[in-house]
Amino acid sequence: MAEAANVRQNLQNVPSIFEISAAETLDNLIYPALSKIFDYFGLRLDFKLWGSLRIREELSPLLTWMLQYLYLRKRASSFGESFYGLQRTVTTTGDLLNRRQQFASATLLTFMPYVERKLRSRIIRHEDTSPWEQRLLSAFHAFHAAKAAYTFLYLVKYASNHSPIFRFLGLTLRYPSEPPKEDQWTYVVLKMLEVLAFFLQFVQWWYSNDQRRKVGGTLINPEAMPRKQLPKEVQQSLPQRGKCPVCLLSIQTPTACSVSGYVFCWKCIVSHMKEHGTCPVTQYPISLDDLVRIYET
Image (tube, rainbow, N blue to C red; front, side):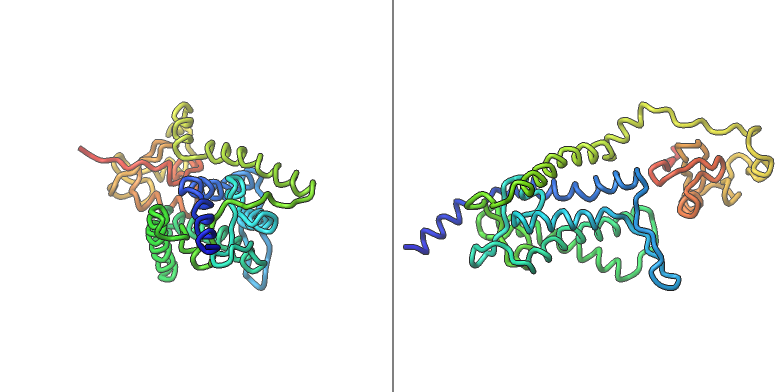
């Protein structure tokens, strides 16, 4: 009887997949939003570790980990899970997280998405990746496939975990049976951080690709510098019409730079952009998003 009542209570205490998805979305907003803020102010880790080894890394992952660990210590839930009133418990006993589980949860919450973003950004920028990085990216693909399967099984109430990470840690998401016991200062600090969630969402919206294109469409790109105003050495090195300004040969796979208006070979402009980050002719700063492939009809 007691065991049946416990099972019935657990089934009634199970959050919906929509609440879980919303919590994960909010957790995933923290790192990119903080990255935009710190990049704007130029705040990064930059120090010499040993010999010629120098550490140049952003602060966002470290602060994201600290924020997640604070919530896991105080409320047994991540930032997003706490915002939606969810709590992590041990699957077998229903107890709250111990110190090891808190540390592991914060680390996986923070550094798995961070590493995946780094790998994907390198591929988008057409940077060379080592075999172990390719294998790691394949492992992330396998993880997402497994997570989709777990989500489906959770949705049809066949599994108690919605993610292989929760299965690995032996944890389950539930509604808290009682409100968390916190002192006044802890409550105020955590509430202020939850209010910060709206600001993080606004920052992420502002810098999203779709919104940037929408806003950027109303802005006027700088005009290409007239040939007469270019330095003499640049004027002398400019190729004839139909030639690439970089390799001085006939253009292969024509690609226009939307910032300056000049057309280059795809390989030439991408190689130059990776090394210098500017247009080879006008020296205007450019990125991969400024390159437009031209298709001949």
